[in-house]
Length: 375
Image 1 (tube, rainbow, N blue to C red):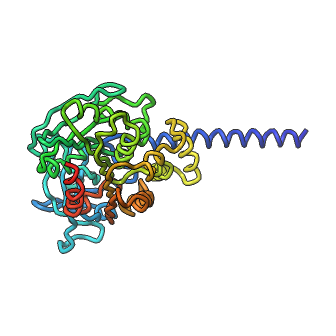
Image 2 (image 1 turned 180 degrees about the vertical axis):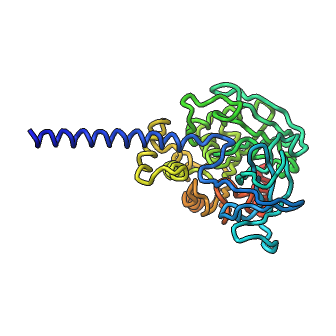
């Protein structure tokens, strides 16, 4: 009886461990997919404000606070914009001093806990940039999708699609550049965003279902007078643009794509999101499988949408090797296989979806060269 009892106990233990692992994998999968808009990217550290001055702010020293370029910093009730680190300003070994460009919201006080964000602006096109805009609602598959329309006389519109951890305020970084060129810009909130209908399962799908909201936005643009559109996406927003260019019933009006930090390897991005949210390494494969099953991400529609052989329109890609969320290598492969259509601008030292922040001047010059022939 003892061997049988021992065997039964061992089987029971294995079943228990297996059930626990599956449950943990499901939890980890949900964690990977619940990167809500406007919330910090997983892995972004909280920084302490140590001191402020008329044109500078002292922050906790970290890889994040040392990033080159221009970023927003935000905390509870505060949003400010910081420029490059000021190396010649005296500071302690555990701090960094950055140029303080402006405080947009609240008061930036010593002791405040903040994080860096690629979003420079906290308001609307009118309140943040002084640009007239319309608040519009786009009829989507799940309900009305709020958007800002910054008008312009050009017949080619840009439809801007934010990514993980940001909102429709993220494209405001580029709206002044586009508005100076008289290009109408539609900044879209899609399913799961604040004010937009939730996804039926409450999860993000890395563009796999959200692209249908892009299709609705393209149709809205056409009904509103657009002759052509350029889809401009960050992270999963870039993946949504690729899906729409491949599958939309009105894809013939899509004249070009701008892809910033595109998610082209969904499994790798799910794994990276789960790891950044401190899912233990042994559970990462379970987390990826659970996320795919939970959200119905079967097959590899991302790779199908980004198939170099299927690409039909000029495409500008901004990406770099320091993106720890969406791997850079698939962007290299896409550019190498379709050099006649794809232009890759490599940006070093920039985290996910912050390619413009690292070097705005170089970024905008590449964008100018790309977009001008499409107008």
